[in-house]
Amino acid sequence: MNIYKTLLTSALLLSVSIVLSQQNQSNQLGGTEGYSIPHLKKQGNATQLIVKNKPYLILGGELGNSTFTSVENMATVWPKLKAMNLNTILAPVFWELIEPEEGKFDFKLLDDLLLEARKNNFKIVLLWFGSWKNSMSSHAPAWVKTNQKRYPRAKDQNGISQEILSPFGENNLQADRLAFKTLMQHLRDIDGKEQTVIMVQPENEIGMLPSARDHSPLANKKYNTKVPEEFINYLSKNKKVLVPEFHKVWSKNGFKTNGTWEEIFGIGEHTSEIFMAWYFAKFTQEVISAGKEVYPLPMFVNAALNAKGKKPGEYPSAGPLPHLMDVWKAAAPSIDFLSPDFYNPDFKYWNDLYVRQGNPLFIPEHKFDHTVAGKAAYAIGHYQAMGFSPFSIESSVDPHNEPLGRMYDLIGQLTPLITKNQGLNRMEGVLLDKENIGSIVRLGNYEFTFNHSYKLGWEAEAKNETWDMAGAIIIQTGNKEFYVAGNGFYVTFKNIKDPNLKVGILKVDEGVFENMKWKIIRHLNGDQTHQGRHLRIFKENYNIQRLELYDYE
Ligand code: DGJ
Image 1 (spheres, rainbow, N blue to C red):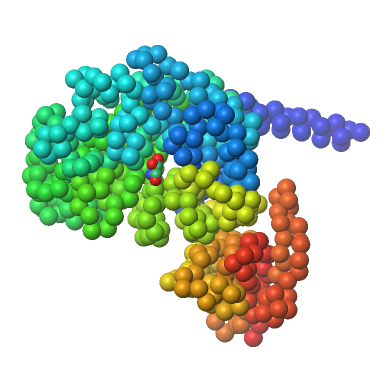
Image 2 (spheres, rainbow, N blue to C red):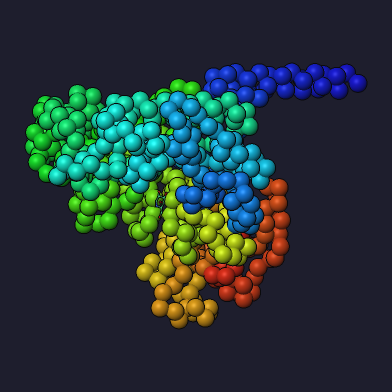
C-alpha cells in the first residue's frame, strides 16, 4: 500500500512541476494553456517550427489569391484539401478589406477564415497582402491609392508613377505598420490560445519594376547620400561569410566603407538593386517588428525568382533573392528566413542558394504541376525543410488521386520520425527524372544508390520521352534499420565503412504508421525485391517500406 502512495505522490508532484515549467515557458513566450506560441527552434543543423510545443511539418498548399473572400466560396475547397492530406493552408488577408477606411478595421473575413480552418482541422500560414503583392500595391486600400500626395508612389527612370508604393514614403510605412500591428493584435486576441495561425508572411514577392530602382524625388535623394553605417558595419563584420556574388560586387571597388551607393558598389543596375533592397528590407523590418511587438509569431518573406540572364529591372528586382541575402539580413534582422517561390524548374539550384548561411528552407509557393509530389519529399528529406506548399492548391481536378496527396499521406505518417531525425544526419531525400536518373545517399555505414524505377524498363512509361519526377525520403532508425518512402525508384546498398563486406537485405516490409505505430501490411521478398537485390517502389505505388540490412563476406 505504502509503495502505491509514494508512487502516486511522486506522479502528482511530477505533473505539477511539468505544468509549472510549461506555464513559465508560456509566460515567457506569451502563449496560454501551457503552450508556448509557435516559434522556431534549432535541432542539429535544421530549424524546426514548434507548434503547441511539438515540431510541426507543413504539408501545405496556398490558396489562389481570391479564393477565401467568402465562407461560401470555401465550401467546395475544404473537402479537396482534406482529400489531398494537407494539414496547413497558406491564405492571404488583404489590407484593402481589413482597413477599408483609415483607422477603421474589419476583421470579419479573417475571423471567418480562422473558424472555418479550425472546424476543418487546418493550420494557417497567414499572408499579409499589404503594401506590396507581386511588386504592385494593388491591395492597398482606396484611401491610400487615391491620395498619392500623402502616400507617394515609386517612379521609373523616366519619372513615370507606378502603382507601387514608394518604400521611401514615411506615411506609407506608418500606414502599413499600423495596419499590420492592428492585425497582429487582433490575431493574438482571437488566436493566442487556439494557435490556428502558425506563421506570417508580411508582404508578398516584394520587387521593383519596371526599372531597377525607384526614381521618385525621395528615392533620388537617398540614392545620392552615403550608404548607411549600419549596412557597412554589417558587411565589415560578416565579410568572411557574405554570399560570394555579393562579396564579389563589394570587392570591385576595394571593399570601400565610406561613400555613396555608387562610390561603394560602382555605377550600374546592380547598385540600383542593392540600394532598393536595403530600403525595401528596412521598410519590411519596421512592419515586422511592429507586428512582433504585439504577437511574435515566426515571420518570413518570399521572392519571385529571377530568370537567369535577366538584368535588374527586367525581373522584380531587390526582393529577398539569394544574391541579396546579405542586404536583407543586414537591414531586417526580425525576418526569420527568406523563401523562394518556384515558377521555374531549377529546384535544386535555387534551394542550394537559399540554404546558405543557415537560412531554413520553407517553400511557400510552387507551381502546382506534376513535379510537386517528388519535390515535397526531396525538400523535406534532403533540405530538412519545414514544409512545402504548391500554389492554387484548390485547382486540383482529382484531389483523391492527386500525386501530392499520396505523397503527403506518406510524409504525414512519417512526421514523428522525420521531426525526430531532422538536422541530425539521419535523413536524406532524392529527386529523380530522366536527366537525373540516379542519386547517391550516405547514412551511417551505408551508401544507397537510388535509381529511377523506369531505368529497370519494367514499367510501360519507361519508353516515354520525358520521365515523371520521382521522389524519396530515407530515414535511419538503427545501425542497419531504415524507413524508405516515396515512389518511382529502386535502391541498392554498399557498406562504406568496410568496403570488403557485401550488403544484403535481411528484411523488407511494406506498412503504415497508425497512431505512430508501425503496422506491417506485406512482407516483401522474391520478385518484389528482385530476389534480395534491391528495395523498390514503382511510380504508381506510393508507400513506406522498413528495411533491415546485413553484411556478409
Ligand atoms: C506568385 C504570387 O506570390 C502569387 O500570389 C500568385 O500571384 C502567383 N504568383 C500566380 O502565379
